[in-house]
Length: 206
Image (cartoon, rainbow, N blue to C red):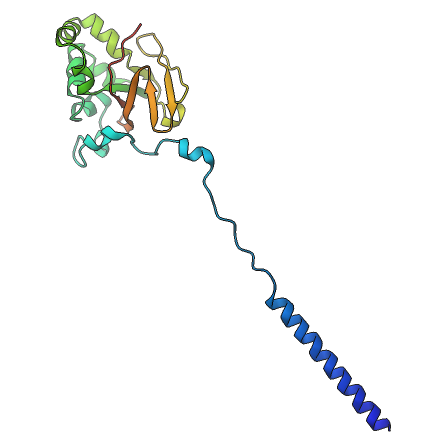
């Protein structure tokens, strides 16, 4: 009788131990797996311009050589502009105004550079008159230059003072930026001493 009781007790203990093991295994198998939440960019990121040069006219810049973005980064701004195929009229104007050395020797400036098409939009007789008037030409060209390198992220809403003495008004955001009434068509171009924003209109000081 005693043997039977002990045998029954041992059998019950073994059964209880087995039940506990099965319960533990089941709990482990059903434990939820922690999946990291997807990483999303801040909403403001879409409004920021690209880190490098941006805009439709950037495609006209040579991929290699002195006129490329890499080549221009090594030269002071007037020299760099002379190697850019869309800025030949601007370079001519800078030479006529005697501003090549001034711009090349300036430290940390921002230049809003009108394209050849921007100058071509001015009636020829008016453009010829401006190019022949050194004082007026200097006034117009220095209205396109701002002290300090302005990063694309600093432009929206900016009202920078120009070397001519007036101010500019920047509107828009991201890669859709306008300076006064001129659209930036290739922005954030780096030269040895300046950040350049190529624009589609010539800015006229008030």
